[in-house]
Image (cartoon, rainbow, N blue to C red):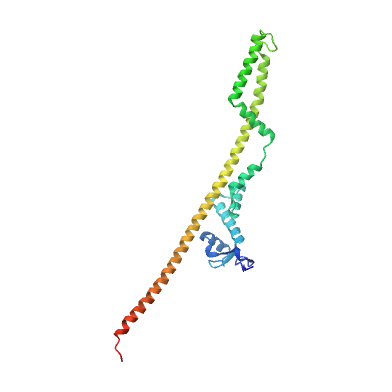
Length: 242
């Protein structure tokens, strides 16, 4: 297997891992040159070494713009350097997170308590309760007017329903915070990758312009040679023999 020696670490790596300095975008190449002054456009390094410098460069950029990096921002940096998809990773984390039974029960109670089914069901229950005691049993049943037992039952339902609904609201707020964090991570990664893409395009344009200039210089030299040859042939017939 063919290998090469890295100009960064002096270690040997497979030829497939070889990255030349001129193929690295300009801003990152300058950053590497600041860390390793001897590294230039003709120098070579391994792909894993380049990923290390990418991570340091992005971390340095974020620290300059945002201050100290949070765990979310560090995860975004790792995702960029490892070239992994952040959205699929976050979706996998959601799939593997199991909700406790109490939380699922609180959501179901809150959904039912805030629906028309609950209103219709409870209205029918109240009408049935009052009708049985006041009309059918002629106010001599198990809960005669003013329906003290019914008031106690309603108070208990309200006392239990309120904290359950609050639990569900707290869970929803926590979900919203997690969703906002994920949106922030994805947007941050998109911004950094778009910035890197612009820098890469600028580097490619500059590189292509340099190549075009070299081609033009060669063409001019060829034209000069042709002009000299043509001028020499024109002068040859006009010369007088000795």
